[in-house]
Image 1: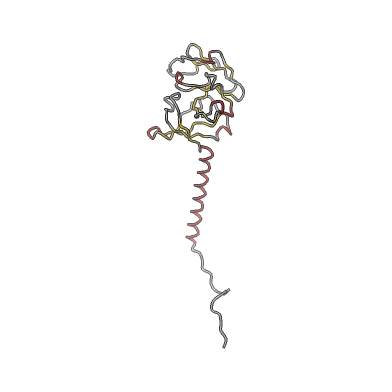
Image 2: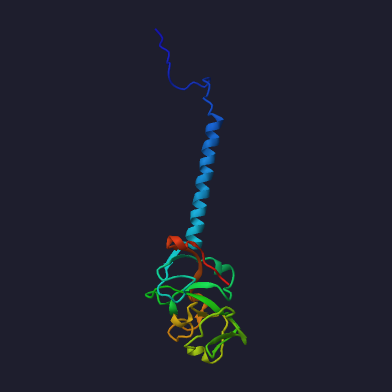
Length: 196
């Protein structure tokens, strides 16, 4: 008596076809996951740093305790310009808190504070009504900003440790962490940080 196998390989058996809608659905999921991963990578690389503002030196642009995202990528492709709000560690001191200040002088600029007023390249810098600067610091004498250097001030000039103070001084480009980008806290102040 001969026994035939009923299971095993059968090359004549019809293959089940995957439904086209299932394949499309799987492909759509894969594309969505890739897009989310790409966006997450870009955010972490470009703006993956959050810093907290300490003090009121940037009032009313950024208040004490505000949390901001920093664009760390932008200065790899372009140079900081006058009016940018930047984040840095003074003298590269990693034990210090991050400073947030506004760039006033870029390489080649001449900066001076005379009679409480700020001049850049001989022209009055502050066009808005601002308080006169009580302490000119090292900017009492005209300063020429060197190559790859930046002169920075807080927006609240009379309550700021900045380039006027020798403990901070003129910043070198490698000291810059990045450009202040978006304020994310407090909730009632969420928004893009204004640059001039």
